[in-house]
Amino acid sequence: MADHSIGDWEIPANLKRELKELEVQRLNLQGMVEDRTQQLKYEVEKRQRIELEVAKLERLNIIGQLAAGLGHEVRNPMTTIRGFLQMLQNKTDLLKYKSYFDLMIEELDRTNSIITDFLSLAKNKPTVLKRQCLNKLLANLFPLLLADAYSQGKKCIFEPGNLTDLDLDTNEITQMVLNFVHNGLEAMPLEGCLTISTFMEGENITLSFKDEGMGINPEHISKLGTPFFTTKEAGTGLGLPLCYSIANRHNALIDVKTGPNGTTFLVRFIRPKLILNG
Ligand SMILES: Nc1ncnc2c1ncn2[C@@H]1O[C@H](COP(=O)(O)OP(=O)(O)OP(=O)(O)O)[C@@H](O)[C@H]1O
Ligand SMILES: [Mg+2]
Figure 1 (cartoon, rainbow, N blue to C red):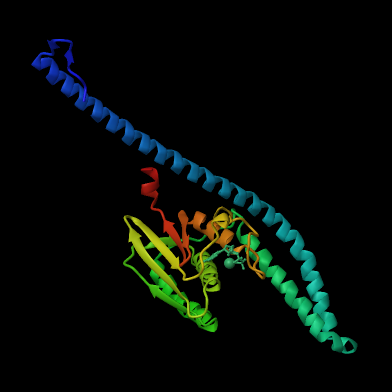
Figure 2: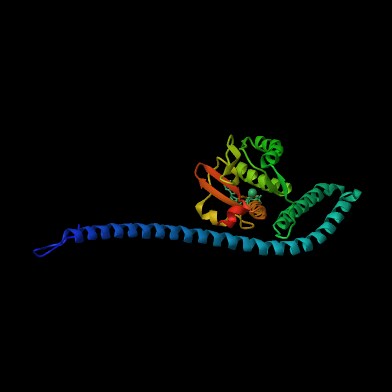
């Protein structure tokens, strides 16, 4: 508390009042400065997050352009090789090598499907948007997801929320869902349950994939979505890049929450109006 007397001189009552008011004002101002500092800190963090997101998207864009050219060039000779292998496979004097030919053709087909995935990252791929209900799309897909889960000894549930319609490319969203579901199922031990849910967050629609796996190593979080980043022996590392690229074309943002009890991937479809309002 400030000392309001100087020597024997007593500060007049009105001055004391003014000093008190000034003190109140000072405290108010201090509060405002602290609030503003907090806001600025939040804005800086938000900006850093956006910059990281933009850098990631730019990387994807370059990769996409490379993919389009490279994929095309590599596919043509592969088609020729596949054709010759098929022809040789049926020659009577080569029948004893049939299993080798089968394997070579299978491997070529696998390579081809990797190239297809990689090509899907190309940004100039046309997206065919159709206004529809996300729940309906998921409900159509669900039997397939359930069969996938059961074949691995795991469970899958779908909890649809009350949603407004969205502009979606059915094929792309299907591909995105399959990738998230595969990752979720692969991350869980036997009996684990993957929960797919949809809900509104204000004006936005959110699609969530919650698994009961071991979570993602914190060092790996920043690498998620980088093409060919994988921790799996038989993984390609193209599932999540595809998800990010598809989300981007649907004006959706992907968020991940992870811990020792599991991981949740959230796909937030952002209404254009909200983006304009910041
Ligand atoms: N739900 C999850 N739980 C734990 N780790 C995950 C999860 N989803 C993704 N990951 C991590 O992110 C990595 C990249 O995933 P991504 O789907 O891109 O590739 P992948 O699954 O390894 O291979 P694929 O190309 O077959 O999908 C995975 O290898 C894994 O380490
Ligand atoms: Mg995957």
